[in-house]
Length: 152
Image 1 (cartoon, rainbow, N blue to C red):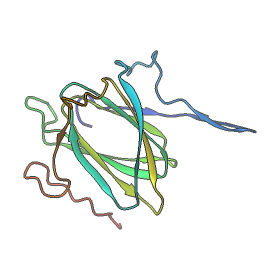
Image 2 (cartoon, rainbow, N blue to C red; image 1 turned 180 degrees about the vertical axis):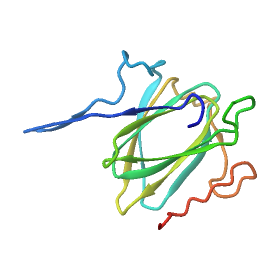
Image 3 (cartoon, one colour; image 1 turned 90 degrees about the vertical axis):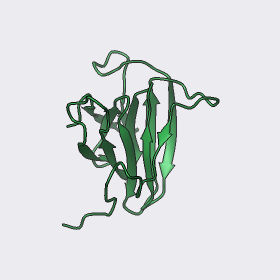
């Protein structure tokens, strides 16, 4: 596991009307602050990567479909520098994954349907000075990761 990454198993509570799934609460041990909440979607087979923040933590939950969320630790001085962590999250495996400041992250939509990902960030997005550093998902000279689906 990459240093400072936290994972919270999510409990789904079904009843006669539907389902309820709490994702992140202010009284959770891993809650560190609130900036904003947003929804992003990804089409089947598409990779959205690599992103890194210097100020904010991300708290990702895939609420529809499935994604392979990948984290890469390139932080100077980190005890897990150079490590890569993979999480398959979504309807079949409801998890919240907290991505610490400085860790590159991205995902690939698995399966045949669009995936819906909710992110609760610890900072608001600054349109004039975005806290976002991007790398090409496939060839970037820093992270050597193969996004191909593994048929084992």
